[in-house]
Every structure is written in structure tokens, then in C-alpha cells.
Length: 176
Image 1 (cartoon, helix red, strand yellow):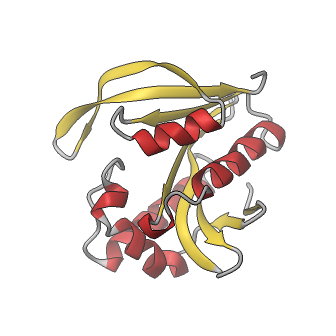
Image 2 (tube, one colour):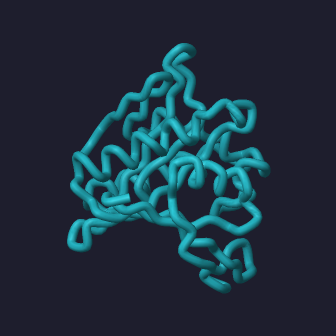
Image 3 (cartoon, one colour):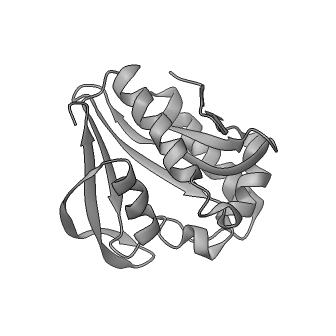
């Protein structure tokens, strides 16, 4: 399984427990976690726990999450990855988050573009999906910029933070 990806400004490497402190700072911001399926963190151990859980999924080839590192500063500015890997059907679902201080600098499309490229050309996947809350305008803009297709709204698809939420389904095919 892949360990690292590079873009013009970013270095994506498989997240490790050593990243917990940096990722906790990002995931403890309610603005960052607003559209994530987690409540904002209040203790660094929560970040360690999630990283260890994601590492288990990675070892089973079910998912992989990367820390997004801005090359110039060598700082972790977010995370991204494949929420599930379906090799049988040659598809995956992506997810991503960026520290609020880094919003609007084009880092999310740059990181997601590396995931898309890797999924199509190295993993030989046919389909990439992203599920986004309809109110998450910034994330929708990232997907639109990367020519993902809006397929529809999955009504009351998940229970998040105690209530059922709609999710918009976006996809991109290798042939797009």
C-alpha cells in the first residue's frame, strides 16, 4: 500500500501516532470538524485513538489516511485519504480536512488531486466517490474544481452527532 505522495507544495504521507499533536490542533477546531462525522476533539488522546484505528484499517487494506504536510514549512496542515478501498469493484471514497488557517489557499484541491491521480493510475481504480453535506459549500467547490459529477442527494443517509443528515454524492470516473 502507498506510503507517500507529492504535489507541487505538499507532501502526503501515511499518518502516524507522532502526528497526533498536530492533528489534534486541527481536529479540535469546531469549524474544521463541522462537516466531519466526529465532534471536535477536546483531548489529544482522541487524535491518537483515531490514528491507531485508521492504521488498523490500513494494515487490512481497507482504508488509508495521509497527513498533509506543507513542504515549505514542514507543518501538518490537514489530512486526506481513502475512507474505504474496494479493490473488487475498483472504487474508493475520499475524505479530506484542512486547518482553518490554511483555508482558501488551494491546498485541498491539490491534495485531493494527488489522491485521484494515485487511485486511477497506481491502484487502477475506475471510480472515486465523495459524500458531502449539502451545506459544505467549500468542499463542494473543491470537488467541482476537480470535475467530480454530482450524482444526487442521499436522504437522511447517516446519523451524525445525534441526527440524520443528507449527503450529496459526487463521483469521478477514470474515463471522465
